[in-house]
Length: 285
Image (tube, rainbow, N blue to C red):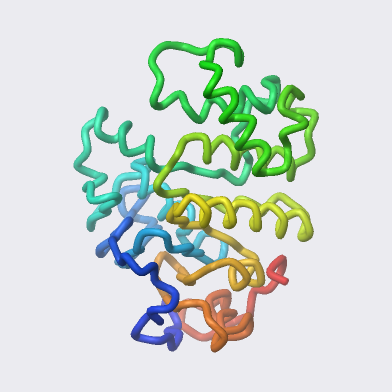
């Protein structure tokens, strides 16, 4: 399927790049195919992310957003190209080194991935398991200082008073806040967030994104987040990357010169001949 080019600035505004400029993530000519090459999910994707940047990836469903994020912690391996995260070549890591990398790369999922029968504090404490030895059954098996830290992380997301409440009794927005607290408990250098507010209503979506971004700014965490909601992306991102059919069609800093309409071209569907058919806008505003 042809890809319609979108005019974007060639040079990223330095005001939107962290001062240190050290690279946290670098993807070069990344290709991912499925079904013995019949499906090309990612097609020559290249970009670099400096430490501390808040990068939002937008695009239609099936454009490759989730597939891209899953390459950054080794859940997928590339068919071609390279993926470097925290100066480590991800596809070449052995099991031990990959596990060590994942300690430093948190993941916030669309469906929360928390254990409903556990209390909030127990779920948050699981964020420490990557650096602990042996099994843990119940909050009492964690050190006192870890339990205290878990309460502090719940307080950051506004749920300290529900620390001992079963997580499956919470609303969707509250469950996602528990998931964010668990990720922060991990003490990651990078957070990957795969459509973290897709299943939440618009008002709660804004609150959850505000919490996620604010906590990551406070902790100087690099964020790569996929979103469908362009208004949220423009409100929180330092930089936008747009994917269509596995290709990067937009890469721009977010500043006063960019608005929602100017990035909607990412959501235009193309017919096999490359002509625009329709503009996808459902759920974006």
